[in-house]
Amino acid sequence: MKRTILAVVAVFVAWSVLDFILHGMILRSTYEATASLWRPMEEFKWVLNYIVVLISAACFVIIYARMITERGMNTALLYGLVFGIGAGVSMGYGSYSVMPIPYHLALAWFLGTVVMAVVGGWVAWLIVGRGAGSVSS
Image (cartoon, rainbow, N blue to C red; front, side, top):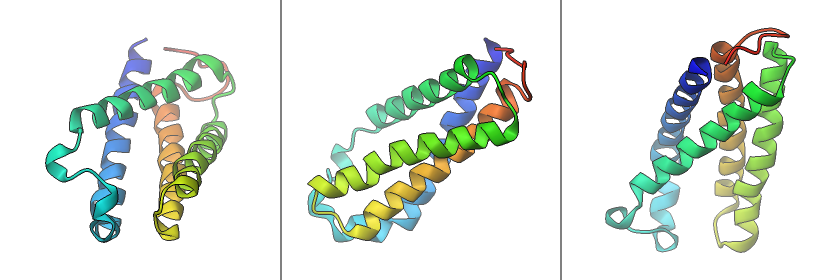
């Protein structure tokens, strides 16, 4: 259980850092150019945003820790890749299909989600357990 909790915290921190790099630095000018689509910063729901990331990290790690028995690094990275593609398509292209966002923003959301999930898979593998049969929690 301790490793699972530590992995949730580590994935949460990794994803928060990557979110800042992607949204706060790389996509900053895109968000400024499309400001009419977003809440003003003073209305942004920061606490809710971090709760969402924490719940997502917890679900991601629990799936890895409780449902994946073959825990090699390649499996963890593949898990992250598949999870990232599924979540990224929804985040990037699902949003693009219903919102007037620039295509490059949809692509960045998709690719960013894939990268974050692959990193999450690697972090989960490092902390929860390495190798088949390593079901420590």
